[in-house]
Figure (cartoon, rainbow over the protein chains, first blue to last red):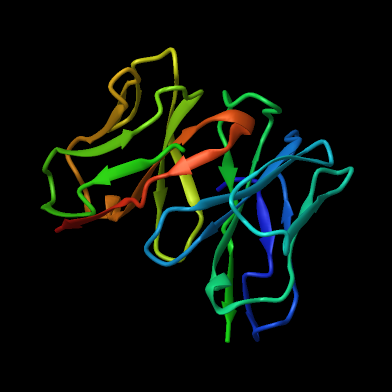
Length: 115
Length: 111
Protein backbone atom coordinates (compact mmCIF):
# COMPACT_ATOMS: atom_id res chain seq x y z
CA UNK A 1 0.00 0.00 0.00
CA UNK A 2 1.20 3.50 -0.82
CA UNK A 3 0.95 6.42 1.60
CA UNK A 4 -1.37 8.31 -0.77
CA UNK A 5 -4.91 8.71 0.51
CA UNK A 6 -8.00 10.08 -1.22
CA UNK A 7 -11.42 11.12 0.00
CA UNK A 8 -14.21 10.46 -0.38
CA UNK A 9 -14.17 6.89 -1.68
CA UNK A 10 -17.44 7.23 -3.57
CA UNK A 11 -19.57 10.20 -4.51
CA UNK A 12 -22.87 10.66 -6.32
CA UNK A 13 -23.79 14.05 -7.79
CA UNK A 14 -26.29 15.40 -10.28
CA UNK A 15 -25.61 17.30 -13.48
CA UNK A 16 -24.69 20.94 -12.94
CA UNK A 17 -23.44 20.45 -9.39
CA UNK A 18 -19.90 21.09 -8.18
CA UNK A 19 -17.59 18.58 -6.49
CA UNK A 20 -14.32 18.68 -4.54
CA UNK A 21 -12.04 15.67 -4.28
CA UNK A 22 -9.12 15.49 -1.86
CA UNK A 23 -5.72 13.85 -1.89
CA UNK A 24 -2.98 13.54 0.72
CA UNK A 25 0.39 12.82 -0.83
CA UNK A 26 3.00 10.39 0.42
CA UNK A 27 5.37 11.79 3.02
CA UNK A 28 8.28 13.64 1.43
CA UNK A 29 6.55 14.07 -1.95
CA UNK A 30 6.09 17.60 -3.28
CA UNK A 31 4.32 16.81 -6.56
CA UNK A 32 0.72 15.72 -7.04
CA UNK A 33 -0.90 14.71 -10.33
CA UNK A 34 -4.58 14.06 -11.01
CA UNK A 35 -5.95 11.57 -13.51
CA UNK A 36 -9.43 10.66 -14.76
CA UNK A 37 -10.11 7.02 -15.58
CA UNK A 38 -13.30 6.19 -17.44
CA UNK A 39 -14.57 2.63 -17.30
CA UNK A 40 -12.44 0.27 -19.40
CA UNK A 41 -9.89 2.97 -20.26
CA UNK A 42 -6.46 3.96 -19.04
CA UNK A 43 -6.11 7.04 -16.84
CA UNK A 44 -6.00 10.45 -18.58
CA UNK A 45 -3.78 13.21 -17.19
CA UNK A 46 -5.76 16.20 -15.87
CA UNK A 47 -3.04 18.38 -14.31
CA UNK A 48 -0.11 18.40 -11.94
CA UNK A 49 0.85 20.59 -8.99
CA UNK A 50 4.40 21.20 -7.86
CA UNK A 51 5.07 23.33 -4.79
CA UNK A 52 1.56 24.82 -4.91
CA UNK A 53 1.72 25.86 -8.58
CA UNK A 54 0.05 24.19 -11.56
CA UNK A 55 2.85 22.52 -13.48
CA UNK A 56 1.27 21.09 -16.62
CA UNK A 57 -2.26 20.41 -17.79
CA UNK A 58 -3.91 17.82 -20.00
CA UNK A 59 -6.81 18.28 -22.40
CA UNK A 60 -9.47 19.16 -19.82
CA UNK A 61 -11.70 22.27 -19.77
CA UNK A 62 -11.24 25.09 -17.23
CA UNK A 63 -14.14 23.79 -15.10
CA UNK A 64 -11.56 21.29 -13.85
CA UNK A 65 -9.39 23.18 -11.38
CA UNK A 66 -7.13 22.36 -8.50
CA UNK A 67 -5.15 23.51 -5.51
CA UNK A 68 -2.09 22.33 -3.65
CA UNK A 69 -1.54 23.30 -0.04
CA UNK A 70 1.71 24.00 1.85
CA UNK A 71 1.64 20.43 3.25
CA UNK A 72 1.47 19.23 -0.41
CA UNK A 73 -2.03 17.82 -0.09
CA UNK A 74 -4.27 18.69 -3.02
CA UNK A 75 -7.84 19.26 -4.15
CA UNK A 76 -9.51 18.67 -7.49
CA UNK A 77 -12.60 20.78 -8.14
CA UNK A 78 -15.04 20.16 -10.95
CA UNK A 79 -17.78 22.70 -11.69
CA UNK A 80 -20.95 22.28 -13.76
CA UNK A 81 -20.77 18.49 -13.67
CA UNK A 82 -21.65 16.57 -16.82
CA UNK A 83 -22.65 12.93 -17.21
CA UNK A 84 -19.30 12.18 -18.91
CA UNK A 85 -17.47 13.28 -15.77
CA UNK A 86 -18.49 9.97 -14.20
CA UNK A 87 -15.18 8.17 -13.66
CA UNK A 88 -12.55 7.04 -11.18
CA UNK A 89 -10.38 10.00 -10.20
CA UNK A 90 -6.86 9.07 -9.24
CA UNK A 91 -4.26 11.12 -7.47
CA UNK A 92 -0.55 10.32 -7.73
CA UNK A 93 2.33 11.74 -5.77
CA UNK A 94 6.05 11.80 -6.47
CA UNK A 95 9.15 13.63 -5.44
CA UNK A 96 9.90 14.74 -9.01
CA UNK A 97 9.49 18.35 -10.01
CA UNK A 98 10.02 19.09 -13.66
CA UNK A 99 11.61 15.79 -14.65
CA UNK A 100 9.98 12.41 -15.09
CA UNK A 101 12.58 10.25 -13.48
CA UNK A 102 10.76 9.23 -10.32
CA UNK A 103 8.08 6.68 -9.58
CA UNK A 104 4.55 7.92 -9.12
CA UNK A 105 2.54 6.41 -6.28
CA UNK A 106 -1.20 6.28 -6.76
CA UNK A 107 -3.99 6.56 -4.26
CA UNK A 108 -7.03 4.25 -4.25
CA UNK A 109 -9.16 6.75 -6.18
CA UNK A 110 -12.54 8.42 -5.80
CA UNK A 111 -15.42 6.94 -7.79
CA UNK A 112 -17.63 9.82 -9.01
CA UNK A 113 -21.06 9.11 -10.46
CA UNK A 114 -22.98 11.93 -12.11
CA UNK A 115 -26.72 11.36 -12.58
CA UNK B 1 0.79 13.62 -29.12
CA UNK B 2 2.00 10.49 -27.36
CA UNK B 3 -0.18 7.43 -27.89
CA UNK B 4 0.23 4.20 -25.95
CA UNK B 5 -1.20 0.91 -27.18
CA UNK B 6 -1.39 -2.35 -25.28
CA UNK B 7 -1.88 -5.74 -26.87
CA UNK B 8 -3.72 -7.96 -26.20
CA UNK B 9 -6.69 -6.22 -24.56
CA UNK B 10 -7.51 -9.41 -22.66
CA UNK B 11 -5.71 -12.66 -21.97
CA UNK B 12 -6.77 -15.88 -20.26
CA UNK B 13 -4.16 -18.49 -19.39
CA UNK B 14 -3.94 -21.58 -17.18
CA UNK B 15 -1.97 -21.35 -13.97
CA UNK B 16 1.76 -21.91 -14.36
CA UNK B 17 2.13 -20.47 -17.84
CA UNK B 18 4.73 -17.87 -18.71
CA UNK B 19 3.24 -14.91 -20.52
CA UNK B 20 4.16 -11.67 -22.26
CA UNK B 21 2.22 -8.41 -22.30
CA UNK B 22 3.05 -5.85 -24.96
CA UNK B 23 3.11 -2.06 -24.91
CA UNK B 24 3.98 0.32 -27.73
CA UNK B 25 4.29 4.12 -27.79
CA UNK B 26 4.56 6.59 -30.64
CA UNK B 27 7.04 9.19 -29.30
CA UNK B 28 10.40 7.85 -28.16
CA UNK B 29 11.25 11.04 -26.22
CA UNK B 30 10.28 9.64 -22.83
CA UNK B 31 11.79 9.94 -19.36
CA UNK B 32 10.71 6.51 -18.20
CA UNK B 33 8.19 3.73 -18.62
CA UNK B 34 6.24 2.25 -15.76
CA UNK B 35 4.12 -0.88 -15.48
CA UNK B 36 1.19 -0.88 -13.09
CA UNK B 37 -1.31 -3.40 -11.83
CA UNK B 38 -4.93 -2.46 -11.17
CA UNK B 39 -7.42 -4.67 -9.36
CA UNK B 40 -11.14 -4.07 -10.09
CA UNK B 41 -12.35 -0.73 -8.72
CA UNK B 42 -8.98 -0.01 -7.11
CA UNK B 43 -6.07 2.35 -7.62
CA UNK B 44 -2.81 1.55 -9.37
CA UNK B 45 0.08 -0.42 -7.90
CA UNK B 46 3.50 0.27 -9.39
CA UNK B 47 5.25 -2.93 -10.51
CA UNK B 48 8.36 -1.82 -12.35
CA UNK B 49 9.92 1.48 -13.45
CA UNK B 50 12.42 1.54 -16.32
CA UNK B 51 14.40 4.74 -16.85
CA UNK B 52 14.89 5.82 -20.45
CA UNK B 53 18.58 4.90 -20.26
CA UNK B 54 17.85 1.34 -19.06
CA UNK B 55 16.93 -1.75 -21.04
CA UNK B 56 15.15 -3.84 -18.42
CA UNK B 57 14.10 -4.22 -14.81
CA UNK B 58 13.27 -7.32 -12.80
CA UNK B 59 11.26 -7.90 -9.66
CA UNK B 60 10.55 -11.45 -8.57
CA UNK B 61 8.62 -13.22 -11.33
CA UNK B 62 8.28 -10.01 -13.35
CA UNK B 63 10.67 -8.74 -15.98
CA UNK B 64 10.08 -5.62 -18.05
CA UNK B 65 12.12 -4.60 -21.08
CA UNK B 66 12.31 -1.31 -22.92
CA UNK B 67 13.37 -0.62 -26.49
CA UNK B 68 13.03 3.14 -26.68
CA UNK B 69 14.12 3.49 -30.30
CA UNK B 70 11.38 1.17 -31.54
CA UNK B 71 8.81 2.43 -29.00
CA UNK B 72 8.18 -0.93 -27.38
CA UNK B 73 8.10 -2.53 -23.97
CA UNK B 74 7.19 -6.00 -22.79
CA UNK B 75 6.20 -7.30 -19.38
CA UNK B 76 7.10 -10.93 -18.85
CA UNK B 77 5.35 -12.83 -16.07
CA UNK B 78 6.86 -16.20 -15.17
CA UNK B 79 4.92 -19.10 -13.70
CA UNK B 80 1.60 -17.21 -13.55
CA UNK B 81 -0.69 -17.62 -10.53
CA UNK B 82 -4.42 -16.92 -10.02
CA UNK B 83 -3.40 -14.00 -7.79
CA UNK B 84 -1.82 -12.35 -10.84
CA UNK B 85 -5.31 -11.82 -12.30
CA UNK B 86 -5.75 -8.07 -12.75
CA UNK B 87 -5.48 -5.35 -15.39
CA UNK B 88 -1.92 -4.41 -16.30
CA UNK B 89 -1.29 -0.86 -17.45
CA UNK B 90 1.73 0.54 -19.21
CA UNK B 91 2.55 4.26 -18.91
CA UNK B 92 5.27 6.46 -20.37
CA UNK B 93 6.27 9.79 -18.88
CA UNK B 94 7.01 12.98 -20.73
CA UNK B 95 7.42 16.54 -19.55
CA UNK B 96 6.23 17.49 -16.06
CA UNK B 97 6.17 13.83 -15.06
CA UNK B 98 2.91 13.56 -17.03
CA UNK B 99 2.07 9.94 -17.70
CA UNK B 100 0.40 8.65 -20.84
CA UNK B 101 -1.38 5.36 -20.26
CA UNK B 102 -2.46 2.53 -22.47
CA UNK B 103 -5.93 1.02 -22.04
CA UNK B 104 -4.49 -2.02 -20.31
CA UNK B 105 -4.42 -5.79 -20.68
CA UNK B 106 -6.95 -7.65 -18.57
CA UNK B 107 -5.31 -10.87 -17.39
CA UNK B 108 -7.19 -13.90 -16.06
CA UNK B 109 -5.12 -16.78 -14.69
CA UNK B 110 -7.27 -19.90 -14.30
CA UNK B 111 -6.52 -22.33 -11.45
